[in-house]
Amino acid sequence: MATITAPGKVSIKSSRGETQEIETKNIVIATGSAPVELPFAKFDGKTIVSSTEALTFTEPPKKLVVIGAGAVGLELGSVWNRLGSEVTMLEFLPRIALGFDLELSNLLQRLLTAQGMTFHLEAKVIAVKVENGRATVTATKDGEQLKFDADKVLVSVGRRPFSDGLGAEKVGVEFDEKKRIKVDKHFRTNVEGIYAIGDVIAGPMLAHKAEDEGMACIEIIAGKAGHVNYDAIAGIIYTNPELAGVGLTEDQAKEKGIDVRIGKFPFRANSRALCSDDVEGMVKFVADSKTDRILGAHILHHAASELIAEAVSVIEFGGSSEDIGRTCHSHPTLSEAVREAALNVEKRALHIINR
Image (cartoon, rainbow, N blue to C red):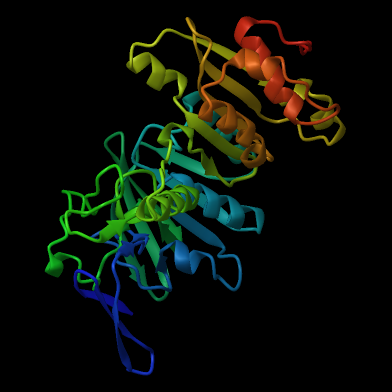
């Protein structure tokens, strides 16, 4: 365990109880995040669990209740559903996958429902009672009280920055109202020589975001021009199918008052998807109606996490839907659906689906 004892000084205590003091010019805090607990559903590691324990079940629980239909809840609920669990998802909001494109999120919910998962939206969980190794989850919805029996309850209502025992507060590092470490655009805290990146600072809690920040931070420390383009960081939900998105959703663009054009293309009109009998999902682009610059891209498909990379690259260099539409894509590939959606921003996709 490492503790900052002063600017430029770190104390490291080994598992054997030995302590080592290190002096350094710069310190980078990258301690990540931890699951958020509910006050009435504290983690016990057995019946009420976090994502950590839900990854290590030795067998599928017969009944699994998941509180929270964000990325983590959906991913683990989807995994255990496929392995045989009866999965019930309870979500306080009127939709799943907040922050992702609403149209594709709704489609993902329909597909997961068809796979056997049950969703209760606008359901407020008010109690979790454990007795004899089993749990009863109580929620309210539309003025009614609902009860759900479960062998395991996964609480996935978010994550919090993890800085417990770090010693940052003692040396004067400032935190914001959400307990995140405050940094400037160069990842510097208010204390000379101390930097912070990843889940302990503002922004999406994503491993690839932290990785980019880590590289940029070290480049800055080395006197180079490190930079992270936060508009070009994709979010991905690793269900089956996967949901991936980068940049603005259609609704977010409209909320900003941006006039946009939308290009969509379904995988059921893609030859590779048809050959693989993997036709569920679509690609969707959000482009500025005046400049054609791509503002957002969203994909629902089992290969979405791979296909989104092309859109991320084009957004990174400020490209347009025409840039993708005029780029040759190999045939037959799933990536052709990305091109077709880009072409469809101007309603000129090469293939159409007969309805």
